[in-house]
Image (cartoon, rainbow, N blue to C red; front, side):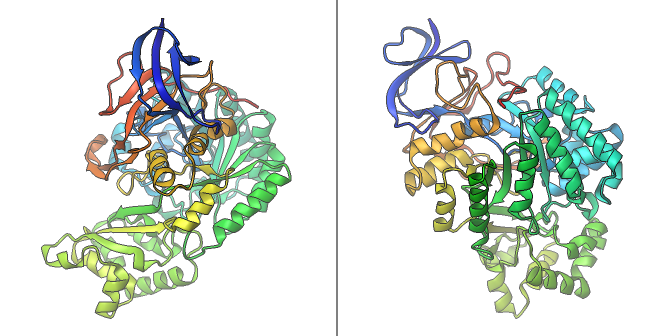
Length: 561
């Protein structure tokens, strides 16, 4: 007697094999048989031709804080995700000394758009070291499986305190960092993550700590990870980071390196393809370098109360330092400050997400009834109509409306032919949903369902079997996750049952259910009929369902070499 049999499903095995209609049986949280006439089960589901694939492994999330108050990591499981990898970009909350907690939360507020009130009220700080963090999450239980990077910025702050955002580390500090990384890898870290990207600005407008690290620090940590003969490195590159530098990390560690973020931007349309070619050349030399790319346009809703897209500019720093209220507004009105911002946007946008694309920055919602006519119009159009520079138009409208004007934009990755080229490279890793971060700006946790609906069904850019491979089997292989990622007898029963004719994501909704009443955007699944983690169902066609037993997820600690 099996626990579950799903009959008559179009099986997508996660390996890229040609789909076949078969039955699949589950017992004790594992796949125990695939074929036909598999016998009786406590529960039998007739899939009637629906597609069944391994659950999505979301390799780029930021649930590190949220998981301490929300063990289900909502909304990911209902969106087909059965495994989440946290701690990307170096932005983790472990290790963290008690005296550094406020600073750590402040950094996350700036760099990952997390509401400070939610972090202050929600985070359970029942840990200090990285091993203690994993132990705490394991004790409380989790909905999806989780893997956790040890993050560079948290590591530097733990060792160097506030100096982490001000200077390079000395030899003793580097040695201390390496010791902590070694302990984290022994405890079960999935690897080490970092960022040198200009957009990554912390509390008070300072660079995130990892941006101050010198090459010798990166190399020493990479060698430490490599000495464990397991684990993955993940790096967010900046405008001054070339692939040769990343390849040296792969060389000295002997480990795979994931390079983020491989998005297409109209202001530099060839850059992403040059980087991807360099990664491919490195692989031909035996280095395991892979680009993290996205199947979704990078879009955000924001106000000038929380202007994340602009905060990475050096000239914006006086606005950050002013805080809020009238002092902040005074900076926004200052002609000299405006001139400095215009100059930097025009001459030195670097790899920042906003690069002067005023024609795609629109007014989503005016705060004053008298300004309703400007809604859905671009800042560039309004500026031309009013004889202003677009930056002045952007600020003046917001100031008139007490900074409540809601702006929306697609910054990058919206050119369909270009994104198609990126997705069709079979070695590119599809991810970058950023689940758990930027919650008031976007929700891309459903990127996997979007891939299946938009890029498979509507555009035919990928086949169903290739999409399933890229969302599950490829991810498991890259990280050395041996016990899941494919529909294979003996593997964990992490499953996604969906209708290929209707799968996708619904419209954005704004909820106010975070700790402290902070808001977030959420999208619901379309065409999903079931999601199982280790054989336990967490979602059906009506969305999330309460866990009937203990939470089924596993804190992953063991990875293949």
